[in-house]
Amino acid sequence: MCGGWNPIRAQRRQVNEPMAGTMRGEEGMKMALVALGSNVRGHWGAPREALAMAVRKLGEVGAVEAVSSLWRSVPFGPVAQPSFLNAVLVMRADLSPHAMMRWLFRLENAAGRRRGRSWGPRPLDLDLLDHGGQVLAPSGAGRPSGALELHHLQRRGLVLPHPAIAFRPFVLLPLTEVAPKWRYPLGGWTAEQALARLPGKVRAQCHRIGVIT
Image (tube, rainbow, N blue to C red; front, side):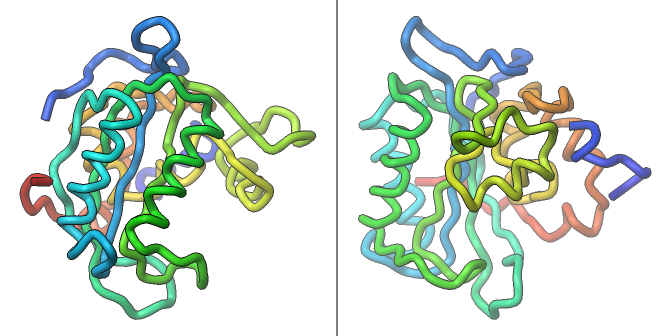
């Protein structure tokens, strides 16, 4: 980590308000951050087409408030595969976190994703980053103390906020476009602060390439 900062310990319309644990829109509507990615052709076409379709489909579930630029990123993990296209959107929906996740899984399946090897290629990858600022861990786990514990708990069920936000340039770069002042509910740092503390060589793994059309 750059400068000795530890995000585990610290832990296109811009949305500039501080959104620390209070991302709420109209009454009954929760604000959600969703990360989108794709790197292989699927049922919805090439990656750019799949992301555009996902944005439209999410607009049927709720109200899409902001969509970031489109970014190309180097894939993580041990599997040789094409570069990813990534984006982040802000939306409002009258859904619980678990209901929201079920919708995301349905869209992934409709796009042709098949669950298999971790870090593998996928026609659509949708991650729920935050849902109304809630801190959520699997039943019986108690309130997690930070991102590292959240990461381990992911294997047992839905975890919020997403524990890997601070480590992923392909999330932070588009996130700072649409919600730069959003605060990580467990640490208090903003999206802008997390991005600024990523090493330059990590940020350089991602490049803005346009917009989702």
